[in-house]
Image (cartoon, rainbow, N blue to C red; front, side):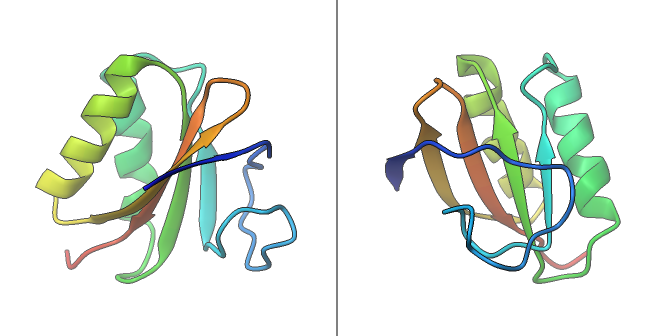
Length: 99
């Protein structure tokens, strides 16, 4: 589930994989946030998405890497992958679950 890539996530959606990241409907960068705001930002992004859509979440730090996937799973979403980047951050690939 862990792979290493050196890419930067942008705030807008990207359906092509030219960046080396998985196809997705939306991407957010929460590397500047601290818990609990890391999951609050993730949940706000998921709340406006349709069931089955893919959200990429770029995050940084041990606490968000533990808490965001756990909270997303607890809320009924599927964490499909974690991509570790060369800069020490990671990207979570989350599929929105049923409301």
